[in-house]
Image (cartoon, rainbow, N blue to C red; front, side):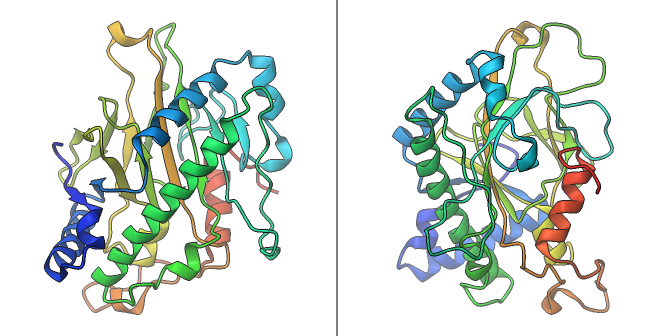
Length: 316
């Protein structure tokens, strides 16, 4: 792994206090300096990863008319399929060169206070939904432990974020970047952007494509080892910490022309809190040298504003 720091979650889960403390410091330092790191020792098995890639390739290979059955206007992009070129980065008019699917939170029957849309069942691919669910749960569990390390770095209670993210509005998004058939005018696979949520856990950053903007304004490749996932700070967490932890601008660039004929797949998990979470800046992150930078807002209102910015929702 080059350019972004690498840590092992098993250090945090161990009984060795020195290893655990060192993990917390490394995570905090990475998120203060560049906002990205790669993580091994997560809860995703190789079998789970292989199964999900197999299932999403089957879905994106379906005819357009079948995929379109799972694109629901009433869901405002929260669940199911979003077709090619529909989403764009904030401030951009050109649609990104991608199509994607959204798996959302899986609730128990007793969790009636959360008004989330149901996950649509893809009848053409019987194992698609069950594999998506197991991946969702493994990434959510991994993310909760990373947030616990972040909480300790910020001198908060270890479980500070638990109540906000358990049953949160998180999204698992398998993305397909189809082959490029002609010279793109201005569009790229994913234009420069920051993520909306608390943290993003990314599968599929094992080849060139994902780039991160460092403190010097340089674009650097973020390439993980095969047993690693990449995790970055989102705008909600950056706002919550008054920019102490950085939500770094990143992008997915178009490949060299000789690779245009190949598809690229990427699977981010956007870890969102419940909508009622107050993103009011932590008092611990405000001082004379770093005054409060953001107005108070809930996670729900912040999310809606950003979904309008990127074209997924229309302003009512």
